[in-house]
Length: 262
Image (cartoon, rainbow, N blue to C red):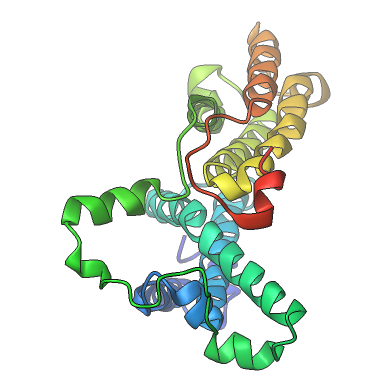
C-alpha cells in the first residue's frame, strides 16, 4: 500500500498522517470530564470532527483498495475497524453539545462565548464526584453501554457486510460484481455500527437502499457464478428486513432528540 499511487498522492506519508490523527483523537477524548459537553463545547465538537470524518475517510480508503489498487491491506482494515467502532461512542456527546449551544443561543447567550467558555446547566449537579473515584467496573460499563447498544438486527447486518467483502471465497464472485460487493459490504458495516448509537439509530434505514442494490446487482453486473445470483437476492432482502426494526432502547434520554429515534 505504501508504494501505491494513492499513497504517493499525499504530500506527506499517509502512515504519519494517520498517527498524528490518532494521537489527536486520544488527546481530544481524554481532556475534560463528563460535563465537558457544556463546559467545553469546542473540545467536544473538535473530538467529533476528528472521530466521525476520520471514520468515513478510513472506510473510504478500504473501499477504493480493490477497484483502484488491486489489493487489500490487512493493517488498514484493522485500523478502519477500530475507527468505525469509535464513531457510535462519540455521537451522543457531540449531539449534547450542539443541543446545549442551541438552547444557550435561544436564551440570549452569546454564541461564541458559550462555544469557547461553556455555561451552566441548572438541572445538573454542579459539584459531581470525579470520574475516576467511581468503581472501575462502573466506568467500563458506562463507556461500553452509555448511549450505545447492540440490537441483534444491526449485529447481523454488520456480519452480512463482512460476508459481502469476501464473496469471492463464499460465492466465487468475480469482478466487476466483487467490486460492488466490497463497496456495499463496507457501507453496510459502517451504517450498522453507526446506528448502534441510539441517537443515530435512524441511520440504519440507509441500508434499505444498500440491500436493494445488493439484491439487483448480479442482474446488472457481470461476475455471478452459477446459482450465486439467488444468494444475492436473499442477502439483499435480509439486509432490508434487518434495517427496518428500531431495536431496543435504553433508559437514556436525549432531550428533544428522543422524538427522532425511530
